[in-house]
Amino acid sequence: GINAENMAFIFLNRFLDLTDAIEEGSLDALDHSDFQNTDIPFEVPLPAKPHISEDQREEIRDWVLTVSMDQRLEQVLPQDERDTYEASLVAASTGVHSLPCLITGYPVLRNKVEFKCPGKEANKESWNKFLMAVKMSHSPPCQDVLKFISQWCGGLPSTSFSFQ
Image 1 (cartoon, rainbow, N blue to C red):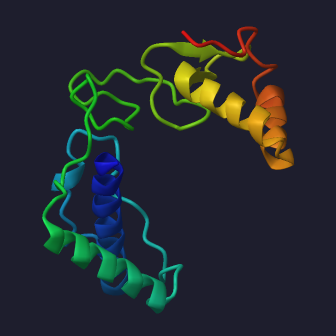
Image 2: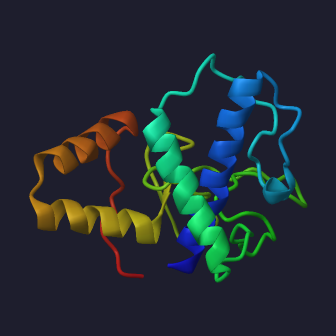
């Protein structure tokens, strides 16, 4: 949806800014205004050179320019009930830390599935979608991921599937 396109625009624009910073060897020119109320770090180590080809970079630049001319996207990251970017694990106003969902990496705020190992949780809706995808696809790689999660988290939750 539109939120995903907004995020793609903001993050790919940031990517282009970072590739420029790599060429200049400095983060000084970066504008951080898009990342207020997020836990996205402003200071990051820069690699010596970009890890993509110049053609790929130009493809990204063309997309960002096309979208910026379109003017139907807002250059804002979607926020949740914490008035914080929805993927931030730290609430901007309170500093409260949330655990990341094992499936999405987004914060687990409510309707959670808890695993046996402490500190391992998933958003119930994301967990149920993942389980359904594993069951419907019969995909060995998906089943491998489920097996890994089970081993990493000390087993799967007893309420493995729920429509609540």
